[in-house]
Length: 166
Image (cartoon, rainbow, N blue to C red; front, top):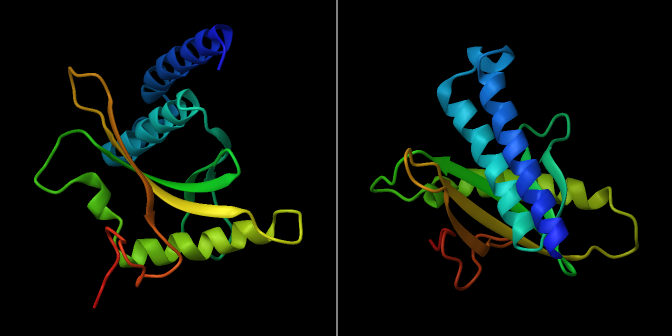
């Protein structure tokens, strides 16, 4: 990423952050605090991934009838990454990424399969499921913990940090 692209990205991030704060006093003020925190975390995650060289192609992708959304979909080179963003305003005893339980992983897999059907080409690209924990702790710089390849297409994958191994 060139210096000019980095400057442009930082300016865009600052502008969107200011607009988000301004908007909180408007139409989204009636949203619960946890939803506002989630939206802020997804925005921070988007810019974090861009700074890391990812090409984000979709945000909050959804398909009617599936009941859920894919927070971020991004390319890292030839790999298509489905990124689940978990945002917290404090570091509790339970890390944010542990909130991606078996049911949530199943939903993400189902949505990813549907997304892949929309892609052109005869064979699907290499795919990875990531979890990106975002910590928006007041008075501190935003912290990120990115778990690449956090889980796979099945729950019984060896080395799966969060998979059920019953």
